Image (cartoon, rainbow, N blue to C red):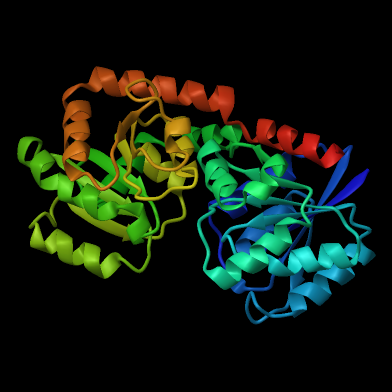
Amino acid sequence: MKNILLYTDTPQVGGAELQMFLLAKFLDKKEFTPILACSSYPALDRWCDNFHKEGIKTIRIAVKHKHDPKHFFSLRRIIKEEKIDLLHAHIWNPASCRYAFSAASSTKTPIITTEHDPFKLSFLKDFFKKRSLKKIRKIVTVSEANQKVLKKLYPEEKNKFVVISNGIDTTWWHSQSLRITDLDRKKTKEELFLAHENSLIIISVAELHERKGLKYLIEAIPEVSAKFPNIKLVIVGEGPERPELEKLIKKLDIANHVILTGRQKEIPKLLKCADIFVLPSRREAFGLVILEAMITGLPVIASTTGGIPEIITDNKTGILVKPENSAEISEALLDLIAHPEKRSKLSSAGAKLVHEKFQAKKMAEEYEKIYRC
């Protein structure tokens, strides 16, 4: 039995943290014992509760911020007390988890990392990153595109890289979908989306950040709504770009066709109440939400950036558009709205792809191979 310490210094929950939970949930417990170590930020409480429900031990580290040296001292203590055989650090930001490398090195504990969103760092951060990478046994990336980025930045470590795609818990998603009634859909469309029952809903679930390219999706709506007045764009999420997006909606005079819902909890229900999903990212490490949309039965439009083309084959499992291109988004939307049979075909192909290639259990099995080395 190997004790695996899953560690992150993240202050908030996102796609990387969801993958950590699914990895811990689906690991073979006869061979591996996962233990979570993370900070004591209140924003992580509900996430940690999910680990508790699965019977996975969670250790909270009382720190003020990600630079707090308590990370190092606490990790070193945890490694010794829990008899950790392998430390698995999840790198949510390329410069994160720096204390994990020192703690593992000081206790002679093997370490692997998963780089969830790599990009070029400043000179000083890059200097320390290169030193840290020398201590790592394996470096996992969640897409081929991410691996290319890292190989270009750190060619001396190229033999350590391996790709393991993100996955989702399809059983859980199906169970959530089955709970949604026609009345739920009607109420959600009318009360949250502020749309008519027969409105066609275009939905995007993303942080309101410039890297998500949401302004290009909004700029596509005037042309679409002019031809199909019954459409409604629903953007689910919160973030720093909200004021700019609100100004853009007002400037384009499309307030009747666009709504920003803010953060929402019941994402499966919201996706189930929609007709088309769009992720217009300018930069995207993988695009986990695309899998969630696909398994819910939505046709997907997304940009050709990062790991997205590794999920979507254009006009087969979805539609690909160039980043920062409102015209292509408009064209794709008009095509799907006008052709419901194409929407149905893409939906079926997308759901089949997720079942065949992006199951969380399969992801966990790939990590188990690394853990055994």
